[in-house]
Image (cartoon, rainbow, N blue to C red; front, side, top):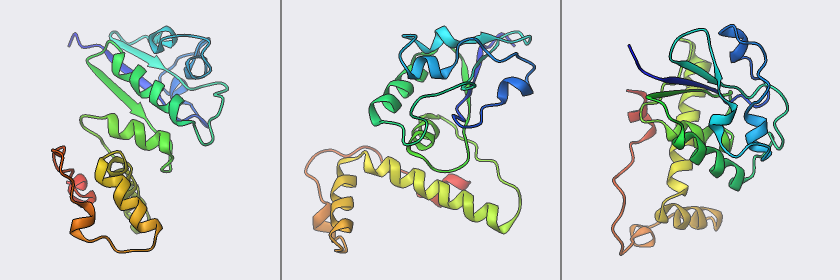
Length: 178
């Protein structure tokens, strides 16, 4: 179809996407970008046997995989935005770490895969709620809400009123399921 597609294996603790698509463990990986050994993410791309498909793998040692620093997460997200591709598919790890949520929220269209079991549905809902709250924390109203909740107060409408133009309303977690 002539489109350039990139696969980003963002499972820092268990990257294995390269094995599924028949690529040897890459010489350069996300860990090289994360640690600063390479400047740009595209330096870590590995072409696959499929025309138009490249891989950016997290296979290998990725420093600070636990509790990724905000600055490193921001650098990675900016790097993903600069990749020259028509489509970027990101394979995220389980859980709701800050890095996982940041990468999930980069998507123009996000897909959450779950099996039809009650615990999986609950886990998916919790993830979407975490993503919603993570996005909300980045808005001016998010900081005010977080402060009020930490103080143990229920927020009133006037506590959250801002006199600046606000970004478009975000969908509720339930809306993300549709």
